[in-house]
Image (cartoon, rainbow, N blue to C red; front, side):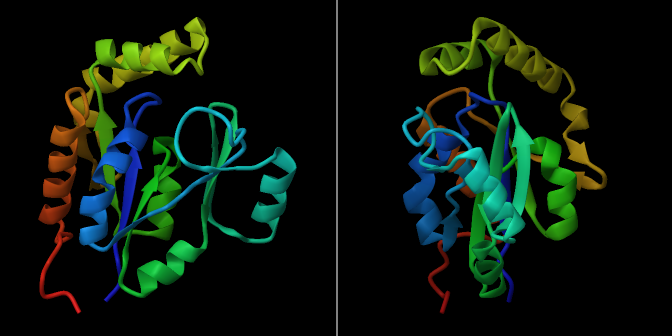
Length: 196
């Protein structure tokens, strides 16, 4: 039986990495492997526990076929290692921090994926973006405008015939983790005791 790919998306600053980190224990109990992304950002940069590489190294890895998925966003390159294919084929579930813009390609590669869209109140998003200090004021305004468009069009939370699962992360992390695990349980992913 194949594992499922859980494709987490959301605006920059929505707290995807925080939700993932807080949910690690629960995800592990549900046999969900959390993927470390390869990013063309300094390993010292504030943010997720990613593998930071140079543009040249990223290009070399991509050309060598080391990525199952890769995309560009916000001036950076992102890659998901090809080892996820073996995990999925072996029946393990895999969670990736993906890009909404790249979701159509991800659906072509993994038609059974579970698309999860992390949403957040714009006032909370502004506070988070300012606190992490990675973006300029103009970039923050840009991200807030994008988030406002997303909040204004909840009916558009679909990609083709696929409905995106919404996960609100405006409040505390414990609540977001509970909602994430309940969402996955609806798709048959939980810490089942009869798993062999």
